[in-house]
Length: 107
Image 1 (cartoon, rainbow, N blue to C red):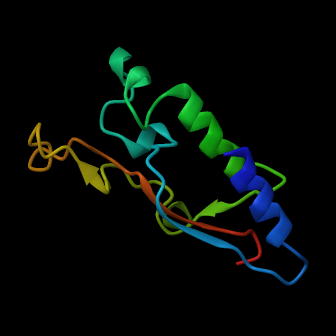
Image 2 (image 1 turned 180 degrees about the horizontal axis):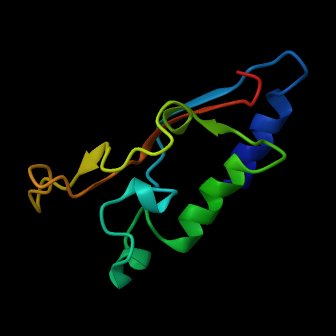
C-alpha cells in the first residue's frame, strides 16, 4: 500500500490529474457496508481496521484523493458493489461498496 501511494505521489505535478479506479476490496466508511456495528465485521476481509486505515491514507494528505461517488452522493446509504453469492446477500441488499474511482483534488 505504501509503495502504491508513493507511486501516485510521484505522478502528481501541478498540472497532473490522477484517477484510481477499480475493485479496491475495502469498505472504507461505515456507510459502505450493511452491518458496520456488528462485532465480527472488524475481522472480515475488506472491513478490517488495517484495511480501512490503509484506504483512508489515500484519502488524506498528501494524496487527498476524493471518492467520486461520495462527491456526487455524499449521504447515500445502501449503495453497494459487492454481495456474497454464497450467502444470497443481494436480494436483501446486504453488501459492501468496495469499488471506487478516486480522483485527485483538482478534478
